[in-house]
View 1 (cartoon, rainbow, N blue to C red):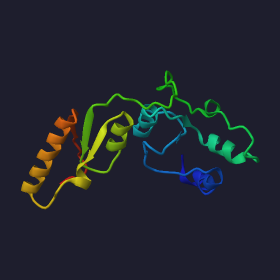
View 2 (view 1 turned 180 degrees about the horizontal axis):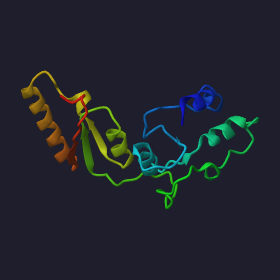
View 3 (view 1 turned 90 degrees about the horizontal axis):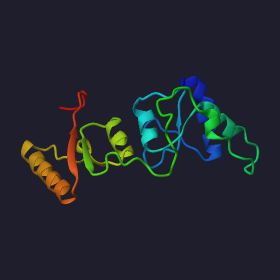
View 4 (view 1 turned 180 degrees about the vertical axis):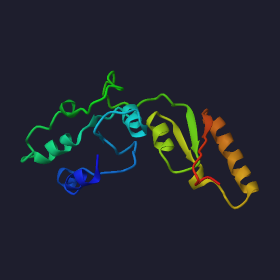
Length: 166
């Protein structure tokens, strides 16, 4: 969705108690607004979290309500084109496909929220690792491996080709 199309909607979200985020947040995102359903990172995260994907028309319909007592628009009436998630059953229960895994990510990108959407525990190397020396990092990493074993979690490092990784 192009920014000029969204600006009037984004500036009005507070009227319906909604907020906007460019980054998927497993705990706070309730809907994904998209022109179509694609198997891109945010679409997969919405699917894994069992959150509806809707068009901007859904937000417009919410904003068009004149009385709080008016019924809410039906999400299925604002379903974008695309069928990759056609068998999805919306529930309040998130996916548990990665339950039992601790996913270690090196940079702030979509890997952490994507894995968390599927039930993984997340270790943010880029925020938590000691970078003062190789020795300190190795000690920290050894501690993380022991914690994962103690918690009975498989520790998996997501590789990254990001220039942020050194």
